[in-house]
Length: 129
Image: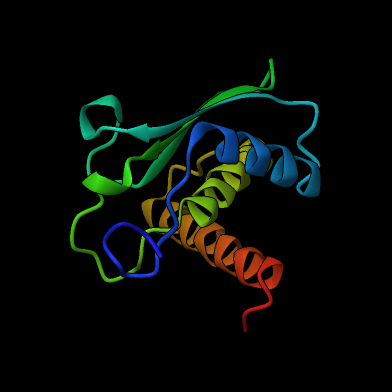
């Protein structure tokens, strides 16, 4: 359980790097150079109100993934799960060549698909249904 007792999982740099390597391999993203920043404060995130984000340059296959510090997660319906958030951000890299469509509804649906896939991969990896 996380520090808040709500079932989340705390992640340090070493654990984060191990999970990054695991999921980078599973998602066939080994050719990407990815810097992972765990325990980020809200003012270190480019986007407000997110628990993770990725900035990437697709032509160079480089990215920075930032994960929000658990202490800043706040009262949310979904428990803090940095591994699931990491998977979500890696899926953005996997699918980045599809780009944004310019259609707001289509882009929102694509983001929901990424979130659903991240959840399914996380649950499958942990033997959850």
